[in-house]
Length: 380
Image 1 (cartoon, rainbow, N blue to C red):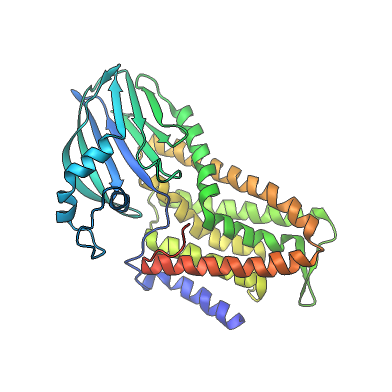
Image 2: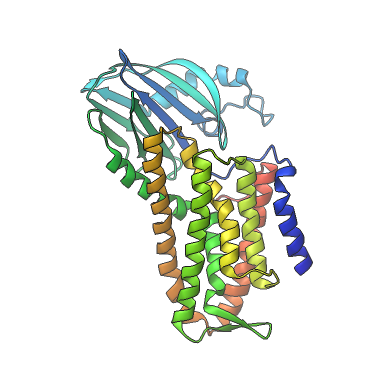
């Protein structure tokens, strides 16, 4: 087993050379709405993932598993009808009467997107812009509409969700504080719906209430050492993913999204396997730091795809990172007391430590197959 894990780590280091070009990121569904003021009229551009449009209006007419430009153009009317029935805007109280002007294609971190360039009758210097959005909310409660408003040097970002379908943009005011709060919540939400990040964190936390003695896991004798170990793991995981989140969002280091998402799945497999056969010459906090660097690149995709300006980017980055930490802290506060209370039981040893690690490793292995081979196996 030791040989397997060491080989696995070698493969991880060599992963960029393996060329997983067909894999898609395991990223929640988002669309990107860019509203630009300052001109004679508002300019509106809306990016919707082709995989979402395939679900909504059926783009792949010949069922060959590929969506061509011709198939996309054939569905232009259907796309416009479906999308524009789920987006409305007002400028200073007047309906903007959105119409599809151009249909283009662009790439985001998780694949190809249709770009809907919209004619909007709203005045470019409107002081109040109202947006009502409901794309995909009926089918996917995790879907988000990420809004970027720009007017010269001023920019603000906003998030629309099933719980918050409307947005009022007071264009005369800078709303960085609101942007900060929205991205704090988005960071919390990203952790809570990010099953892979949760399972990785739990893999790290499971052994925290145990200690290795004479090749056997034994329960810790006091809460203090367990709490100290958890704090160390969470802190270094935070430091590690903050480093790569910042490097990636600032575009100092960029990695293919497909590779990052597959490697995140791989990190869970290795961590779960190390719980069963602790042969890696690394402590829990070292594993948290090493793989935390990879998870940071995964967190960055949400912000990179929005195309933020420098000021909005800094605020969004800060808010998102704080939200991620708060989301992690909530998981720790729930998990740690329960794990500590159960650490003496055979249920914890066999059901949580061994059985739980096996289940997590199997799930992560299926994710890795999905992400490398572009398959859909699991419903989450």
